[in-house]
Length: 417
Image: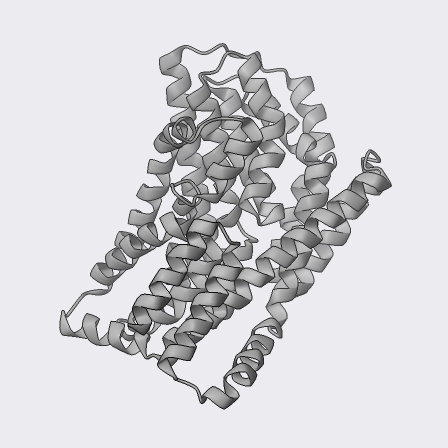
């Protein structure tokens, strides 16, 4: 009866369209109250103490810095410098503008760590260019939407930081392990764009060495940022959080001193957007963390591990099951919530089978990346619908050919990771 009431309340909250953190928080508190896993008289104190422990994780400090970095870049000239260079570099191949879009998303994602920010920053420049060049809308829109999703796979990545905190995994190792799948995914999407361009016989631009060189020189400071971040981390000069601070200061220097086109009013708007996004993300993190806390106390990881052992699954078989679960979860949950809720449930069984937390983490990110572009709750789909003014059906159809590349990369991790 009590479970039915909680289920009914959740359905009602979904129907009312309440924010996700309200839904997660209500579900978590309701489950704690009904199951009495903690003494009722100290329930509030225990939950507040747990939330304080979550927000006290040092690595979480990197999230607001990367959010600020992405907001400033999307308002300034860094994104324009990157896209101009990629366009000059590969615009001459069939489907070159779509290929440039994907490569720009890879470069921008290696700086911002955010998928929607990457999609909007790059798409606002190259999507109209593809339209003017007569590209089919499916080719152009799909390149922007799915290319933008690379923002959470190419390190640094905000979801990867959250996974590292939940799994107690080395975040630097996670970043390093995601580079190869990120390159596979990006180059696979470039292959789709070029093949599509050849079949559609799209117009091609002439390659001009002078134009490419000038675009490279202008983009060089921005292209150096991933080297500054990842090189500093793996060179032992600073940790992930300190790298985020270095990156934020460097981007502010680029926009205010080098490019000199970011006015203080625009910077103020970027700071406001970053603060709003941070508040939303942290609210979701805290409420989803409460739900994962309940699942751990309810011994769900133990039941999952017992189920796996009872079926004598191989590591590869278990990873296939995890991939399937994540594909379904990605259709209904945002990436951060899925990580916070599912990592405590699925990680112990993976470790018992000898699966590395780093490999599991990369599989989490790649598979949940597909969730960004799958209905009904794909974040990139909704951002694209609003920003590019396209209906859901058109956005989903445009994403499908590129999305298959991500599925292939996820399967590759399961089979040979």
